Length: 278
Image (cartoon, rainbow, N blue to C red; front, side, top):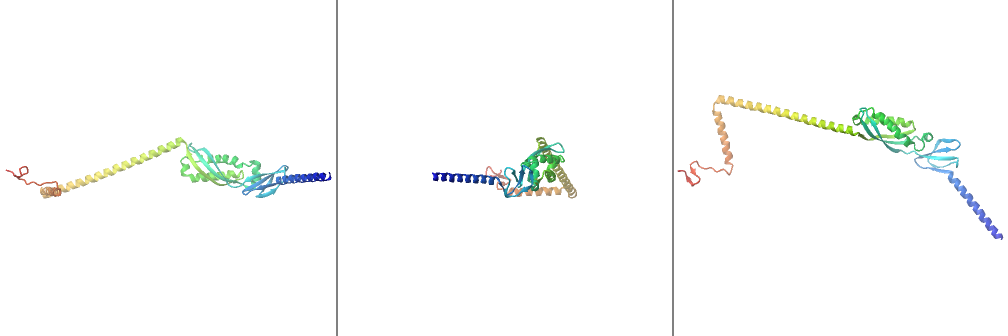
């Protein structure tokens, strides 16, 4: 009987100890939280509200139920968004903007109070559209291509200034894509075709002018040659013409002599009877 009571008492003590250890482990676990690399924590206190100090990396203690940590990722993140804007000459263009951003670590409590954990998704698309529309409206459609570096610089300056109002720092801002509306694209294509036709017409005119000048020079040369021949004929009589005929006949005879298909027949020979003519 005594041994049974001792056993019951031992088991009771073990159960109490196990329960105490379980409660203690649960309390200890709820009193610890870990901030990983590239993160910061903001503490919300039920009595004091959001504490102004941020908590760095590592494992930290808090008061269970009374305090709760909110973890922020402070590493640089990329955001892409599109914006359709009107140019100065009333053309619609679509731009894609890429932004690399991270929060101002010292102002994380203020960010949490005003915007929450998804601060970048709430702020960047709206201020990006605002700045893009304001900058694009200062340029004509064709200037967005010819002055793209200046457009990008103005967008960056405006976006950096607006992001600072929300305690967001921008590492890089870039316009990655630019496209025009169908009407403007068609107008550009027609302009290119017209320019090509104008260049072709210009080439045809230049070619005709060169041919005209060549014809004039050739006619002048022929006229000069005829004049020289006329002067020589007047001075030497018909002998010059006869000399030219003899030279031409000599050239023809020499050409025929080199041709193996030419047969020379004596003037008085009869090629059909094989003998001389009667």
